[in-house]
Length: 497
Image (tube, rainbow, N blue to C red; front, top):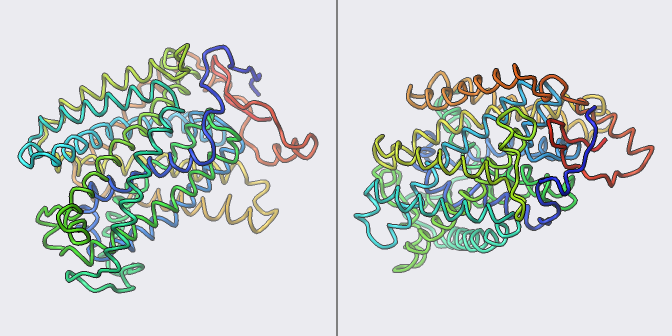
């Protein structure tokens, strides 16, 4: 076991700046309901048609299993690296690095997948022609991205305040318009209960896997609460609970709006590129509804850019602190106590990706490729986290029915589901999307080999393995621990034991 050394006064992250409500808001903002609907509904409808609500439901069940995994792993190890640290300590350090790297590359790709629509939807409020200009979208999207990077640099407290406003307005708009549309009814299709479970309507396992991969992208981002654990009060409870409640909240929003879209907008119009959220908004509030729905998408996109920046910067910070990536990533700003070096590197790489992506085609094409690639990558670290919790809690899994369900069966099923999505889609996705998704993952072999050869203690002396039975024994003898759980500098791994 590595020696516990507090980081207070030594450049660590600022502790106890987020509360229970903050974590719930962050989880919802991370999943970005309005952005996910605007960016991915066309792809989801292409795969599932009117049964898109069923695809979301079938994905939400295993996703909640992964959320339970994050909840219970966070009780054993409070670490900004989240799945990177948990998988490394429960399974193997190399797999831990793979989990962390999967999040990093998916977040970098999302910088393009999020920033370009941010520019596009912002411009659409003023000019339809400018919204169709890729370079204009790149410019506005890059500006929005830089503003969000500045807020993240200034600290989690300021970030949370911004999220209260943006996410609060977004949720109110989506819930209000979605419920109003359901009450109003539509002429495109009549509601059918089979929309909610129609497993037999996806065209076999490959069709279901394609729809579920898009659905997984819808939910992705709620786990930002885990990366903020070192900055959250009573983190062992709040970080995991925030993620669980966030998944439940966005699932409800996704179902309401998707069913409303089925009823109000024809499948043909959506496939033809019709701005379906605008159509939905106009049906509820003629004259202003369309613009209000676009505003929700803009706010959602900006909000999720911010939470994604938090995820990747905290992951790089944890990996730099453990010297599995350059140690400079583990430095924090003396005043704001945020990983400013990691943020700076992210900004430079992302701006380069913005420019490079503009040569690939339209915003729609770039977005489609990015969603599929990110879907493959998030399957990796979600599946590994699901396996990790089963291993960490294996000695206590049969002590109660609750344990069996929440630390074994449900997370284990979630891990199997994510593994199935990964394998099935690797066999069926277009080559470009597979190359982006797997190629970015494969690049991680280089830093893994370099820093393992350099003797990073994360690989050579990773410290105590995660063991819930040992944690229970310590709590039984000494009561609930009040120890700080911030990970040490110089390669140690956080522990509450």
